[in-house]
Amino acid sequence: MQNLQSSPSERQLPEGVMCQVCDERRTNLSRRRLLGAAGLALASAAVAGPLSSFPTLAQTAPNAIAPDVALARIMEGNARYAGNSPANKDFSAGRMARAEAQFPIAAIVGCADSRAAPELMFDQAPGELFVTRVAGNFVNDDGLASLEYGVKFLGVPLIMVLGHSGCGAVSATIKVVQEGVTLPGHLPGLVDALRPGVKAAIAQKPVDLLAAATIENVRYNVAQLQAAKPIVSEFVAAGKVKVVGGVYDIASGRVNLV
Ligand SMILES: [Zn+2]
View 1 (cartoon, rainbow, N blue to C red):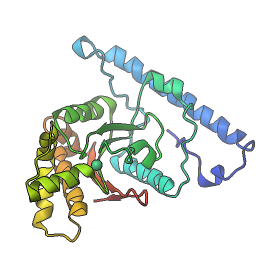
View 2 (cartoon, rainbow, N blue to C red):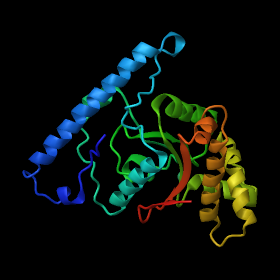
View 3 (cartoon, protein in one colour):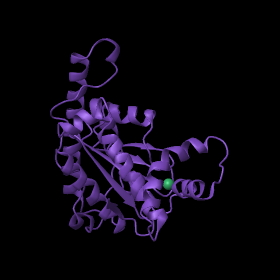
């Protein structure tokens, strides 16, 4: 599968001089549509019974790439986003292909924070990222089930646990742990999930506790996912899936691996 994104030199061309690029994109999208159709054909032929609504992986799927290749691709997208030169602007491209199948190259475990939208920060088009979001970017059973689906049935080669600067959920957990604050509603359950990372950070006596706790929370959930039985840990052990951690800096737009 060729890269659908234009090169920087192509993006600098004025409108009206893009015909060749457009034609190449149409060719790529047509190829992708065919691949999607092939995947669906395999699915309908190979799967029966209660799992019949689940897709079957096609060896030729566009997301059948090495985890490190997927990581490089989304980090390149983040560099474009941080540099304010996103490649993905035509969201109508590939709609018909996407209606037939999805081939996400990465799963993101992100925070619900309105400023931390993975598709934007990694400059990825619809269909490229399989995203679960919950305040504090942690993995619970439902989130894990989603990731298991992404890994086993969609062929996602990369999982990134993604924290961010100024996280309100992590900040609130610090207050609960350090000051004994009691939160209303269902928030105490969320705090319990973030407690391990926050406690690990407090033990380090860092200068910036919020930043340290955000990193430790990411690392804790990366470790949890790497060991998550039965599905994710097996794919990790086989080298088919990599789990990495990142922190998004809202001010700069950059994601740093942690
Ligand atoms: Zn947050």
